[in-house]
Image: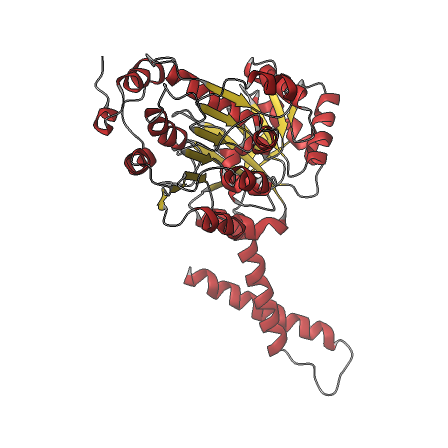
Length: 438
């Protein structure tokens, strides 16, 4: 068996066994390396990192290591903003505790399930609770879930919690826990509105920021296509047919647009799945199963699928529009593809009004390829900045020529033609001079 470098953290044998036999983890990621020692000591911490950096196991491994199986009480509570993300965390917990010689119990509490039945089953309290803040808060208010002896509380994807309006529930749950609580907050970004919550519960937390070595995976090809007042849905359809992807996600900014695009693509004959916040819990669960069972080749989604859901095998991402509220969502969207060392293609349809956003993404190190797709053919086109610069230079030359050629005090017939000829000669000289300088 390959030696694992996790042994230096003095984790219990069953966790080492799960790491090697179940998870195939042999070397800690940067965030695991930096945070696990302090979490093992019971210290509170804030971890800022992008998806795919190994943050889930950065807290799971040390927290599961601390579980006292003989105490039949809730010791760890982990909250996530979406049911799907909570379910994924719960599944990871299950993979590890299966190897424990002692009986460690974990339960998943999310919306869309029978609350009364859940309450009845809580006569025996689990060691580990994973769930969405709203459902956990409901169970605490019903006095069904007893959390007054919890040692560690995890708030995962905290900025998404804030965006989705769940921080109030998180706050109420945390308020029912002991004062000497270990709080672990993980977030891709730390927005200003999150800081009051952090200040309220974390006195001197360890802050670890793992900046990605590059904004997105190395094997993603970022393609920019100008929309140019075309029928964007037809363009998306043509792209999807041309790509014939293993699995493609088309991202929109709103639930309304997601439905419009999905319905239009279905009318054109494609079998399309959709993911957004208006789907009922049952429909969302069914949709995720169908996607993971590869029943759909195409999925239209809002940013819920960029952060809150893990979809495997995505070969292509198409941004029907650039994210407007949080530019970071571009990173999260394209991060659905080119995972685990594979390659991927991310296409973005853009308008001229998107220039500021695109400039900011380029400053993050994203290199776009400028292309167009017309009549089923790919064409390389000028960089949008080159076109802008060309127009700017033309405007400057025009302005200069107009300033030099003055209207005569006494006008004669044909004076306008003469002025125009003079301006054209000045512009030609200026253009020749500019070419020579290049």
